[in-house]
Image (cartoon, rainbow, N blue to C red; front, side, top):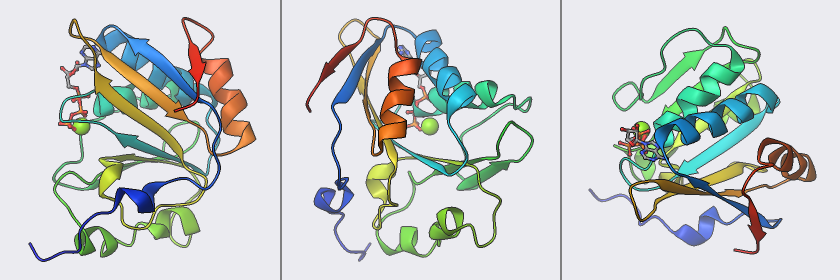
Length: 180
Ligand SMILES: Nc1ncnc2c1ncn2[C@@H]1O[C@H](COP(=O)(O)OP(=O)(O)OP(=O)(O)O)[C@@H](O)[C@H]1O
Ligand SMILES: [Mg+2]
Protein backbone atom coordinates (compact mmCIF):
# COMPACT_ATOMS: atom_id res chain seq x y z
CA UNK A 1 0.00 0.00 0.00
CA UNK A 2 1.57 3.32 -0.98
CA UNK A 3 -0.22 5.45 1.59
CA UNK A 4 1.83 7.87 3.68
CA UNK A 5 3.32 6.62 6.95
CA UNK A 6 1.17 7.19 9.99
CA UNK A 7 2.87 9.57 12.36
CA UNK A 8 2.02 9.18 16.05
CA UNK A 9 3.17 12.76 16.56
CA UNK A 10 0.18 14.00 14.58
CA UNK A 11 -2.09 12.30 17.11
CA UNK A 12 -0.93 14.32 20.10
CA UNK A 13 -3.56 16.43 21.82
CA UNK A 14 -2.80 20.13 22.19
CA UNK A 15 -3.68 20.28 25.89
CA UNK A 16 -2.78 17.80 28.61
CA UNK A 17 -4.71 16.93 31.73
CA UNK A 18 -3.46 14.25 34.08
CA UNK A 19 -4.35 10.90 32.55
CA UNK A 20 -6.49 8.55 34.59
CA UNK A 21 -5.44 4.93 34.81
CA UNK A 22 -7.91 2.20 35.53
CA UNK A 23 -7.65 -1.59 35.94
CA UNK A 24 -10.27 -3.56 34.04
CA UNK A 25 -9.97 -7.07 35.50
CA UNK A 26 -12.63 -8.59 33.25
CA UNK A 27 -14.91 -7.80 30.31
CA UNK A 28 -17.68 -6.74 32.69
CA UNK A 29 -15.41 -3.98 34.02
CA UNK A 30 -14.78 -2.76 30.48
CA UNK A 31 -18.53 -2.71 29.86
CA UNK A 32 -19.14 -0.86 33.15
CA UNK A 33 -16.67 1.86 32.15
CA UNK A 34 -18.47 2.19 28.82
CA UNK A 35 -21.88 2.40 30.52
CA UNK A 36 -20.69 5.14 32.86
CA UNK A 37 -19.46 7.15 29.90
CA UNK A 38 -22.63 6.46 27.92
CA UNK A 39 -24.78 7.79 30.73
CA UNK A 40 -22.90 11.08 30.92
CA UNK A 41 -20.99 12.04 27.77
CA UNK A 42 -22.60 14.94 25.93
CA UNK A 43 -23.35 15.13 22.22
CA UNK A 44 -20.35 16.37 20.21
CA UNK A 45 -17.94 14.10 22.09
CA UNK A 46 -15.33 12.38 19.97
CA UNK A 47 -13.96 9.29 21.66
CA UNK A 48 -10.69 7.94 20.28
CA UNK A 49 -10.06 4.31 21.23
CA UNK A 50 -6.66 2.78 20.70
CA UNK A 51 -5.17 -0.56 21.69
CA UNK A 52 -4.07 -3.88 20.25
CA UNK A 53 -6.31 -6.42 18.59
CA UNK A 54 -8.78 -7.74 21.16
CA UNK A 55 -7.92 -5.20 23.85
CA UNK A 56 -11.60 -4.39 24.50
CA UNK A 57 -12.50 -1.42 22.29
CA UNK A 58 -15.75 -2.89 20.99
CA UNK A 59 -16.68 -4.16 24.47
CA UNK A 60 -16.31 -0.61 25.80
CA UNK A 61 -18.47 0.81 23.01
CA UNK A 62 -21.11 -1.87 23.65
CA UNK A 63 -21.25 -0.62 27.26
CA UNK A 64 -21.39 2.95 25.97
CA UNK A 65 -24.40 2.00 23.84
CA UNK A 66 -26.13 0.49 26.89
CA UNK A 67 -25.44 3.66 28.86
CA UNK A 68 -27.00 5.68 26.06
CA UNK A 69 -30.07 3.45 26.16
CA UNK A 70 -29.53 1.89 22.74
CA UNK A 71 -31.45 -1.38 22.56
CA UNK A 72 -29.80 -2.67 19.37
CA UNK A 73 -26.86 -5.02 19.74
CA UNK A 74 -23.68 -3.17 18.87
CA UNK A 75 -21.28 -5.14 16.71
CA UNK A 76 -17.95 -4.07 15.35
CA UNK A 77 -18.30 -2.13 12.08
CA UNK A 78 -15.09 -3.68 10.74
CA UNK A 79 -16.59 -4.21 7.30
CA UNK A 80 -19.17 -1.43 7.21
CA UNK A 81 -16.66 1.07 8.73
CA UNK A 82 -19.40 3.18 10.31
CA UNK A 83 -22.53 2.10 12.21
CA UNK A 84 -25.05 4.75 13.23
CA UNK A 85 -27.38 4.35 16.22
CA UNK A 86 -29.76 7.31 16.33
CA UNK A 87 -32.15 6.02 19.00
CA UNK A 88 -30.31 6.58 22.30
CA UNK A 89 -30.06 9.60 24.61
CA UNK A 90 -27.80 11.09 21.93
CA UNK A 91 -26.87 9.49 18.59
CA UNK A 92 -23.88 7.15 18.51
CA UNK A 93 -21.60 6.89 15.49
CA UNK A 94 -19.34 3.84 15.80
CA UNK A 95 -16.37 3.82 13.45
CA UNK A 96 -13.70 1.12 13.04
CA UNK A 97 -10.55 2.02 11.10
CA UNK A 98 -8.82 -1.37 11.48
CA UNK A 99 -8.73 -2.15 7.77
CA UNK A 100 -7.68 1.31 6.65
CA UNK A 101 -4.52 3.36 6.47
CA UNK A 102 -3.35 6.77 5.33
CA UNK A 103 -5.36 8.25 2.51
CA UNK A 104 -8.05 5.58 2.80
CA UNK A 105 -8.88 7.15 6.16
CA UNK A 106 -8.76 10.64 4.69
CA UNK A 107 -11.11 9.50 1.92
CA UNK A 108 -13.76 8.58 4.49
CA UNK A 109 -14.36 12.29 5.18
CA UNK A 110 -14.89 11.56 8.84
CA UNK A 111 -14.81 15.29 9.55
CA UNK A 112 -18.43 15.32 8.34
CA UNK A 113 -19.17 13.79 11.78
CA UNK A 114 -17.56 16.54 13.80
CA UNK A 115 -18.35 19.40 11.43
CA UNK A 116 -21.99 18.25 11.68
CA UNK A 117 -22.64 19.01 8.06
CA UNK A 118 -24.61 15.85 7.46
CA UNK A 119 -25.19 14.30 10.87
CA UNK A 120 -27.03 15.23 14.04
CA UNK A 121 -24.66 15.98 16.94
CA UNK A 122 -23.79 12.79 18.79
CA UNK A 123 -20.96 10.73 20.21
CA UNK A 124 -18.42 9.64 17.61
CA UNK A 125 -16.55 6.58 18.91
CA UNK A 126 -13.57 5.52 16.79
CA UNK A 127 -11.80 2.15 17.11
CA UNK A 128 -8.19 2.02 15.89
CA UNK A 129 -7.90 5.80 16.26
CA UNK A 130 -4.13 5.30 15.77
CA UNK A 131 -4.96 5.15 12.06
CA UNK A 132 -6.38 8.69 11.94
CA UNK A 133 -4.37 11.11 9.84
CA UNK A 134 -6.21 14.28 10.87
CA UNK A 135 -7.05 14.14 14.54
CA UNK A 136 -10.29 15.87 15.50
CA UNK A 137 -10.03 18.64 18.09
CA UNK A 138 -10.83 18.14 21.78
CA UNK A 139 -11.19 14.37 21.56
CA UNK A 140 -11.38 12.18 24.64
CA UNK A 141 -8.81 9.39 24.39
CA UNK A 142 -8.89 5.92 25.83
CA UNK A 143 -5.94 3.59 25.35
CA UNK A 144 -6.54 -0.06 26.25
CA UNK A 145 -3.73 -2.46 27.04
CA UNK A 146 -3.39 -6.11 28.02
CA UNK A 147 -2.62 -6.60 31.70
CA UNK A 148 -0.90 -9.54 33.35
CA UNK A 149 -3.37 -12.15 34.48
CA UNK A 150 -5.77 -11.78 31.55
CA UNK A 151 -7.42 -8.43 32.29
CA UNK A 152 -6.96 -5.07 30.63
CA UNK A 153 -5.86 -1.61 31.65
CA UNK A 154 -7.24 1.72 30.44
CA UNK A 155 -5.58 5.12 30.30
CA UNK A 156 -8.10 7.91 29.82
CA UNK A 157 -6.96 11.34 28.66
CA UNK A 158 -9.27 14.31 28.71
CA UNK A 159 -8.83 17.20 26.29
CA UNK A 160 -11.14 19.67 28.04
CA UNK A 161 -11.89 20.60 31.67
CA UNK A 162 -15.45 19.26 31.26
CA UNK A 163 -14.15 15.90 30.08
CA UNK A 164 -11.71 15.79 32.96
CA UNK A 165 -14.41 16.36 35.59
CA UNK A 166 -16.70 13.87 33.86
CA UNK A 167 -13.95 11.24 34.01
CA UNK A 168 -13.47 11.85 37.70
CA UNK A 169 -17.22 11.31 38.17
CA UNK A 170 -17.26 8.09 36.17
CA UNK A 171 -14.17 6.63 37.84
CA UNK A 172 -14.51 7.09 41.59
CA UNK A 173 -13.16 3.61 42.32
CA UNK A 174 -9.62 2.23 42.44
CA UNK A 175 -8.19 5.06 40.46
CA UNK A 176 -4.64 6.22 40.06
CA UNK A 177 -4.16 9.68 38.67
CA UNK A 178 -0.81 10.54 37.18
CA UNK A 179 0.96 12.20 34.32
CA UNK A 180 1.52 10.01 31.30
N1 LIG B 1 -11.11 -6.09 30.84
C1 LIG B 1 -11.14 -7.24 30.17
N2 LIG B 1 -10.58 -8.35 30.67
C2 LIG B 1 -10.60 -9.52 29.97
N3 LIG B 1 -11.20 -9.68 28.78
C3 LIG B 1 -11.78 -8.59 28.24
C4 LIG B 1 -11.80 -7.33 28.89
N4 LIG B 1 -12.47 -6.45 28.12
C5 LIG B 1 -12.85 -7.12 27.01
N5 LIG B 1 -12.45 -8.40 27.07
C6 LIG B 1 -12.65 -9.47 26.08
O1 LIG B 1 -11.67 -9.35 25.06
C7 LIG B 1 -12.18 -9.87 23.83
C8 LIG B 1 -11.96 -8.86 22.72
O2 LIG B 1 -12.75 -7.72 23.00
P1 LIG B 1 -13.17 -6.66 21.90
O3 LIG B 1 -13.73 -7.34 20.73
O4 LIG B 1 -13.97 -5.65 22.60
O5 LIG B 1 -11.74 -6.06 21.53
P2 LIG B 1 -11.39 -5.01 20.38
O6 LIG B 1 -10.32 -4.16 20.93
O7 LIG B 1 -12.61 -4.35 19.89
O8 LIG B 1 -10.82 -5.97 19.26
P3 LIG B 1 -10.48 -5.57 17.74
O9 LIG B 1 -9.08 -5.04 17.78
O10 LIG B 1 -10.55 -6.89 17.02
O11 LIG B 1 -11.50 -4.59 17.27
C9 LIG B 1 -13.65 -10.20 24.09
O12 LIG B 1 -13.76 -11.58 24.31
C10 LIG B 1 -13.98 -9.42 25.36
O13 LIG B 1 -14.99 -10.05 26.11
MG1 LIG C 1 -13.31 -4.08 17.90
